[in-house]
Length: 81
Image 1 (cartoon, rainbow, N blue to C red):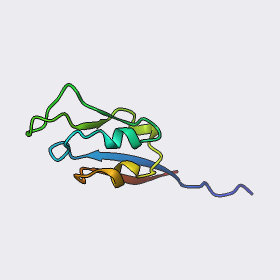
Image 2: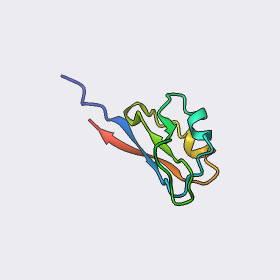
Image 3: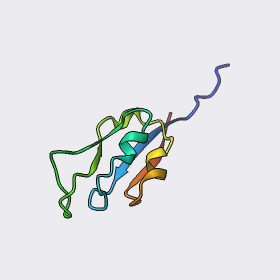
């Protein structure tokens, strides 16, 4: 008999760009270089927010979420089979 398929995890990176102050802490602490500062756009405070450039490589460590001083980034878990 075959073993039942194991659920693997995929992660969604949510960034509230209006709240982000572009401090780069999330970029520096991401072990997979998923994030970078978006130098082409501004939020309403005229700051460059962070953006996910490689969200498919997120491993769900939540380092960015923990280090963010403005609580503007969240990692959500998504089940896949």
